[in-house]
Image 1 (cartoon, one colour):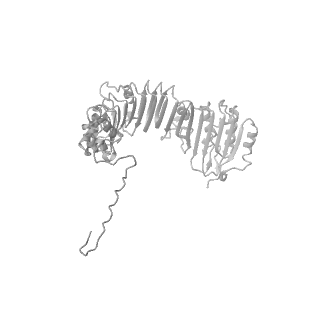
Image 2 (cartoon, rainbow, N blue to C red):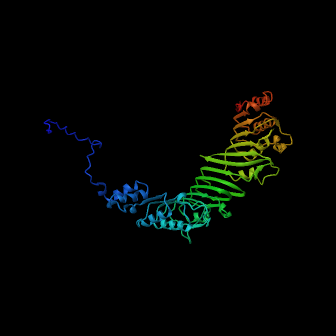
Image 3 (cartoon, rainbow, N blue to C red):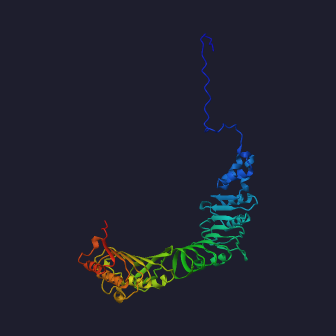
Amino acid sequence: MELRSGRLVRSLPTPPPRPSRRPPGFPDGDGSDRISALPDEMLLEILGRLRCARAAAHTSGLSRRWRGLWRHLRELSFRDMSADAADAALGQVAGQALSFLEVDIPYKHRVPEPARVSALLHAAARLAPADLVFSFSLRANCKYGNFPFEIPSFQRATSIKLRVRNHYLIPPAGAVEFPLLEKLSVACSRIDTAELVRRCPRLRVFEIQFYPSRDVAANRIKVHSPTIEDLAVDIYVQLDRLDIIAPVLKRFSLRVNMAKDSTVSFSAPMVENIYWFCSFQDNNVGFGEKWRLSRLKLVMEENVGVLHMLIYWKGYDVLPDRTFSQEIAQLLAFSVLELELELDLQSKIHGIGALVSHLLGVCSSIRRLKVDIRQYYWHTECSPNCPCHQPQNWRNEIISLKALEEVELTGCDGTENDVDLLKLLFRCAPLMKSMTVVLAPESSLPTDQDCEEIYSMFEANPQVKCSVYRSPSKG
């Protein structure tokens, strides 16, 4: 190019085309929407991978080809939505039966009145899902409180999960059944479990969670079923009665607070795995005037049962309403007994011999015994008339412990009470193979001379592998 001054200006060379950022083997696009040209079946497969009905519905803005296509999905999840939005979405779903439906109304979108929830439940039932998950929250100050929700008929459902928290559920009116239902999970304040299970002739898995309710009837669980194989019961209130008859039950889980006059009836001859946890808040189960049961846990796996009991010493002066033996009699057989004994913070050393002797008499078929003693601020021993020594004749008892092979005592102080307990164990367990004693921390230990009788006892039983350790000082 020539300027008016006569000078020549050279043009810059044309830059080469910028390389494509697409990976090798992928041709450059021509701007056409090839995805929208796919068959409906493939587009529905793409929408299904989104795992969210709301996200699937948003694809309607891509092109006319996608508009309303989400309505024909067989699996739909409506999560984190208001009741109005969920109701409107359910009304747009095409009429075909669904394989999966989830409706979750979280607390931030809590429903103002129960009628809206009932409407959503029936809207879900009209879609006849094979697998249903339904969860919602009502406002905390809802004037209806403990409102009953009737479960609609789900004739095609094989799995149902309902979460209504502070309200209760009732089965469908009449004799309507859930003919195909195999898995049922319910969280509510009350439901007639006996009637509900009766309506489910194929039920194999049943999970129930109860939340606080003013209705006493809500604190009773009755499950009689010839088909249930897996049963889980979580009760966040005090349970009055548990009645289980399940001839093919294999797995059972129980977490519950036991009421003062609670009763348990459990029949499951084929059960293999058990997790049984009970807490006792009324301090009404114990031994003597002072020992009380705080909680017990029974775990059974592969036909080996382990019972763990947390027992504490408290300043009561009355006998308990129920004894340890009454509580243990309701449990299935176990071979390992673990005792965690906590003493009230005071300046006395209390003996555990009478308590352990009593429990050994109740659990005489155990193979292993573990006792963990936790007491603090020891200074002097308690008096000979202390309730911890009652009954006084425990030292001379003969208890048949023919199966007991292993004993571990942790937190012993080497006093006369501990020595007498060891004598009882050696005398009553002829097949004992090992005895381990872990003495209390050195800051509270007696002298070696005080423990000399323990060492002598071990030497007198050479057939038993005996070990003595001292716990390290705390702090």
